[in-house]
Image 1 (cartoon, rainbow, N blue to C red):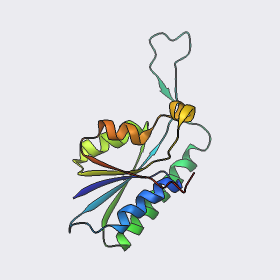
Image 2 (tube, rainbow, N blue to C red):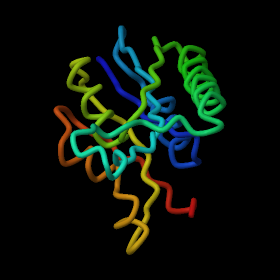
Image 3 (cartoon, helix red, strand yellow):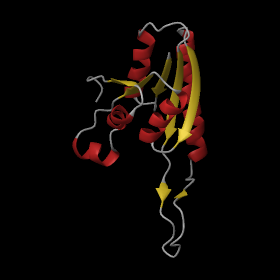
Image 4 (cartoon, one colour):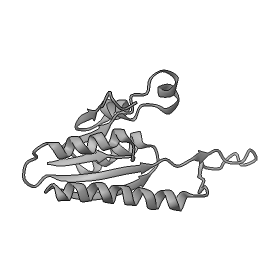
Length: 150
């Protein structure tokens, strides 16, 4: 079985990690621990009508990448300690599309993601990663929620 486990370092993604750890999985199961770094995309300068959207490398980007690599490594170590095969992937972009693309490209059987449970204007502004993944995933999706985390 191939599982994509999307993590972002929040208590909600830690709940998703714990959900994977609590369950018995078939022999040979591999968990791909995925974290996505959101990159700021900006429009080209006003005078550049034929320009293409660019990526802004803001101060602290290298530190964010290093911290994200550390996060997926720690999660993978937890999974390995529980007897699962684990690998790590860090990508940049929109988490909603990257998670779905990773599952498609890797032929995953399951995506596990935590839900922040945003509502109202916050959900509208940020978008719901979990909702988008459920709507567009090429495989089964487990959304892990913990109502005690706010």
